[in-house]
Image 1 (cartoon, one colour):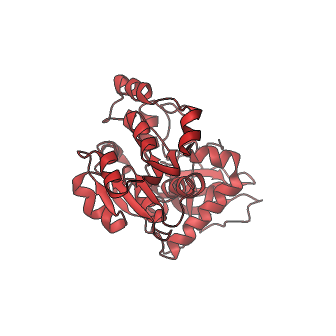
Image 2 (image 1 turned 180 degrees about the horizontal axis):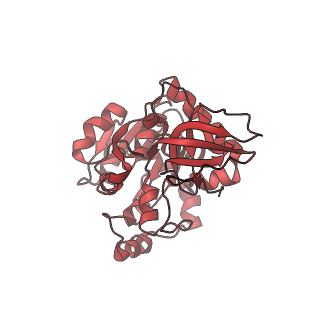
Image 3 (image 1 turned 90 degrees about the horizontal axis):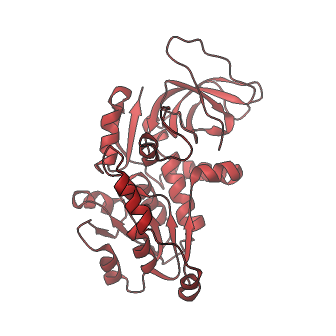
Length: 330
């Protein structure tokens, strides 16, 4: 799962990085929905009390003797698969940093790693989205949804359906969603009204009864890609009944309909991919950065908060108010 970052508290002396490590002065940290799972004790890997944060950006202040890919003074995006990014300074393995252009803001540099890589591998590698296909993206105004829309639109002739609150529809349409659907509508009926054969890919971050609906919406050779269980989280506090309901209503997968209906079910977890296949992770990370610097992709920062206001930053996410990425700064 990767080594946890070394953090330095204010007033402590900074230890030299080990031979393969890099020390970074953190300037901005991107929050993800997974951080809410951690805060509510839902992560199987990390339990409170802990330092949250899967990604950040900053300036390299020191490198180990064996590090050749980065140097002091470089601006970098940082991936922290075990958490710990929300700190003033961290020391991580050198394969956890990616050099970004100096003219890229730290807010943007801290915002693209988790969301765009999750969308990239889910849409293309797991989902196999092809020219002329269609994709349904739940929470199209969120971090992963925003990224997935832009990535889907890099494929010629792709139609994008996206769910979001009514007041977010103008924003997601501008981002590339062809058919916005608000939460008071029956999204299953709305999709089939526009595309009776169904869609090629459903990016499902909900689980529960929506998992069954996702399968019902697939065209032959289509695929559901599960990337989370967002329905488990309501507001700021854990609701045990809600957790039980989501898992109880998420039906088991039977081989027979997979064969007879010619569709597939896949899942994706970015941390596990990095742990098992660092080469693929790094290749995708660099490709996403290239697409951002060439203006093919456009990360959106919803809001920027100070560390002391992080509770309000989380409310922005848990209450589904954000369009794009929520960022916090030291």
